[in-house]
Length: 368
Length: 246
Ligand SMILES: Nc1ncnc2c1ncn2[C@@H]1O[C@H](COP(=O)(O)OP(=O)(O)OP(=O)(O)O)[C@@H](O)[C@H]1O
Ligand SMILES: [Mg+2]
Image (tube, rainbow over all chains, first blue to last red; front, side, top):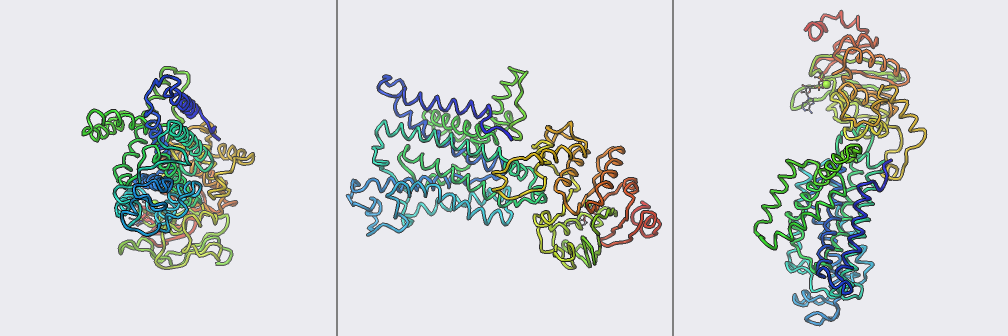
């Protein structure tokens, strides 16, 4: 039985802790605003991406489920949170309707659609943040895994799933604000979303969620079940002939992964202030895969690292040369696949191992 | 047939009009050791696919212990009934260690929750140690299975088969890629385990089949061409023509 917090995980969690404490402090007035305040939400957003990457890595890195539609689970979690935030606006909308969000008044709707009921309560929204992506993944996975759809075919249908959802959410009649999505949020839990303290709270919540996500994923992959997952990833047929119901294992991992992605989306939305159908776009889902491959597939920590590095690079580069971003991302991906087959984390660890030849920990991530 | 562990009768299977299995009948009794030989494409692997529920026959009966219809069972169900299988191409989990491969195969609960919350117990650790000794992989205990030689992978897979403690072992070409000494040792091992388990071995290596010293079934074009002791079938002119003579 592998330890829950191995060295790699320990180092990452410690660094995350330092960041979580240092960034809000450094941006506070007391510290003379050493770093600009917007950085808190920006890094908070990165942490949500990192959690999303961990979710994907759990399925792809450990069970071989290459989902090209994970952005959909992220977006659904985001929408569930967005619906709560919309209802928190109350009568402060442009049209001043006490119940209906502005876009519904604009569409001349008389009452709230049934699927918006309950979203005025935080606990209900929080439940839906996990239940909706989880349920979709469960139903989708039930059909896909039972019919033994795997490999490229599975990737294609997950991509089709997110594309279909994008088209659906673009429609005004769906009742989710059409192409504008949900925005103009005011409060969360009665706290002003523009206040520094609220932003810090969301940032810390994202860090905690990331740590929790990593630990849950690690707990699953280091358990005896984790070995079955690796068996399915490396030799599905063998696992089946050993008497393991492969589809049950895949369904479990896929669903947990989708729930995790939903939580990431829910924390992301209040920090960026908007959720729209663009989050369902197939390109987004492909980008998640690139994060994981870049950081180091099957390492969890590497996935988180990859997401944050790419997001940082994207922020910097889109500031200077926005039209070059996609080329840069593609180029980076090619470089890493060619020269760092085990991702940035693998390269980092190999480098460290060379500095200290006495302690080689290189073998562990291949089998994790 | 009364007292049979495995019973195949009149089984047929075509792939795109090609008769891979044609009116095949075979009976295996509990604890029996049986060798199956035949030229390439005779249908030996397909026969195992049918027994394990991987392939559904077009016609014929396949019964387990005279009562369970194996044509309706899938791979997982046949595995849980007590049929273990070694593939023609060695199939071990390359990124797991040798011990982890055995642990994965050990008889025990196969459900998601049981695996998530379960721990490796004392008896399991002892069983793994016993199997490691049996297949002579004690040294490689913590090495990734992918780093083993071809022959060692074959043995690990046999070890995994034994870990499942099945009533019937289907062993497809275990000696491929082994040295002569390893081949003889494998035959010895299979002879040892027969009795407690029924074993059906497919093999091309005649020295190996001789060492098994058991009843031999010769397959050709999906049918049983001859059956009996090795001396008996090797004297059969048809067998000599299609298989041994070449
Ligand atoms: N899934 C399949 N689709 C089409 N043809 C198949 C399939 N499986 C087996 N066959 C064909 O059935 C015939 C029997 O194949 P099988 O693998 O059972 O032979 P074998 O006796 O195991 O031969 P070998 O000694 O080469 O392993 C072959 O001609 C093969 O091409
Ligand atoms: Mg074969």
